[in-house]
Image (cartoon, helix red, strand yellow):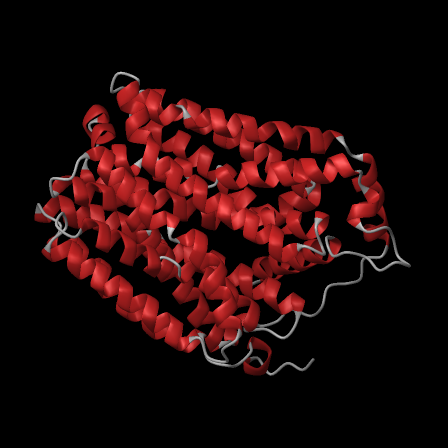
Length: 436
């Protein structure tokens, strides 16, 4: 493993260790070290942050046609725009642990919310395609670091309620995703069909999310005391796990990348597919909202089902089959069965919580899970970058959606194959020849 990757993984492991709850003899628990109002403020901050982790993406899809025409943006450039989220998540997500070690997770999340607010406010009024892309990247940078550090925040403040708080966080994330898709077009119509205002209004929600994190960053005394104890008790990092030797790790990375490709193609292009088939812009936005909203209930069901199975391959196949049927419907009758295809693709997009669950199951140790998560997600997001861009290029040069939809369906097949491999009952430690 290259030295830079080894150092990064060691930093992530140390950050994870620093946020673990201490035993009674070491230091007070997070609940004891922080007042009751702080805990409530953290809950509000987590919910508001989660609500802001997807609107920058899903608010754009229903208005992509208006943005293209106004800025003179080609379909290929629009495809590049839909690839920017994956690029930002891969690049800036890797930096999140290092930033958190230097400034603290709360401060980085606070800065992330501020970056989202500024980026979304500037983006519609940037005056051209380069400015639009740059402002989008700023907002997505904030999303990337916040996305990575939310589990750290949950573990630090709610070590005894990780499951319930993660469920609340996941529900808020799905709600923000679907809400932005559903109401952006009606908001735009109510404001004189001005897409600039329709997109920019989401900056207000991000600005509100900054407020609780500012208060939390100012409340430094209890956090500083606990972090000082943690630093004094820090132990040297374990020898690096040669994770690149694990076939399961590579299978998980590819599975994560392919499901992310499908998700960002869906968020970026599905409304336009429906609009080109004769569906109104507002209805296309609602259809995308339905697709995203499927993640609310299934994010609870799928992980619980997966943990009861030694092999998660059957779930991978079931989700992939839903995706293939949904793509076939988009190809043959996009408008006639629009609601059915939206539901099926929403089910298929729930490969994301399944991937996270399998990451936790494919290692015997906490340090192994951290390293596997870093490897699978960073590699996966890098792999997902070309997909949305390629869809835009195919759409522009073919003049229709036949080839792009064929590409989407074609990518579902290798996703199922690597998902089956990743779902086998084995651990990365066994494959790398390491012992407990």
